Image (cartoon, rainbow, N blue to C red; front, side, top):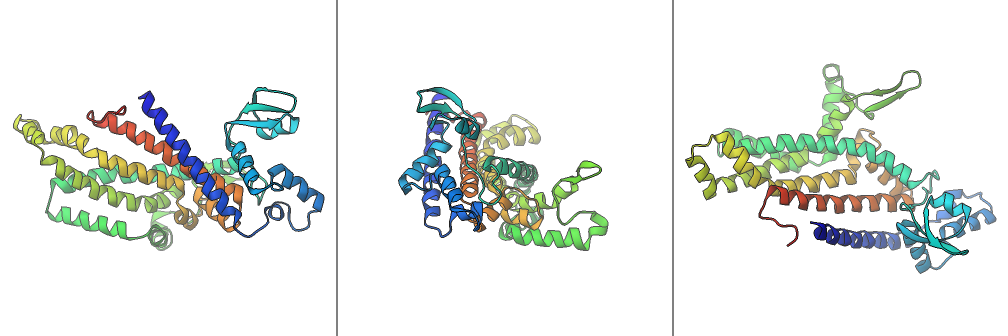
Length: 352
């Protein structure tokens, strides 16, 4: 297990390095002056040069890249100064009068538009997207697996055909289309009955009452985000259960007189869940990466909205931060899925 985790973490670091490198050099060929974006057109020349030195923008492209990678690295070398200590908030390991080797959290610099730390912007957006993604995937996973099992056990019945047709429809409709339709139907036309809001986060701030939890604001965006993974999970669960039911050990279990519930949930489902776990993990990572259109339709204000605004503004540090965050999510989710595989299926050995 330990050997597997070390190997996967090393592969993950290689993936992260590749992602950061590609995005870094792509942004270098885009038009726009980052110094002007950060300080405005009316800033004086001395201030611009000072900012360029701080971010290494006065150096050749190769040195700029090494400077950025040094900022991101957990172990990095910096000049010994009080300014760097405050900037990076590092723990000194060893060094000399000119420089120190330090341990720190990745420094993703500051946003060009509002000068806030990228890590702060990402943490705020991540919390919002996490609530939305977790709720959407819980709805999709629970109902998708149950409906998929139901469709498989009722194969070729009207219920099976209805569920399969509905899942095809759910896969075919893009999220931004279903979001607009659901918002118009439940938050506009039927608002008097549903009492659902068209816009808003699930925590509302009132200057007099403080923070108020409004869970109903979570329903429509989570439902919109969960429709496509729900449809795919239904189809995949149905197909996987039908394949497992044909196996000899299932016939043996039934011949022993076990109840249908025990056969399905103890023998069939456990062996049919591997492909379902794969699709759930993939979709969850995708949703965490940013539900762009859904968050924009419902004014949710999560990572998706942050990323879209950063791309349009050519906000390099924020785009790099969201890209790196997305890559980390995918790497960690893939490692977690491999571990879950081993727990679900004893035939899978992580060390092999």
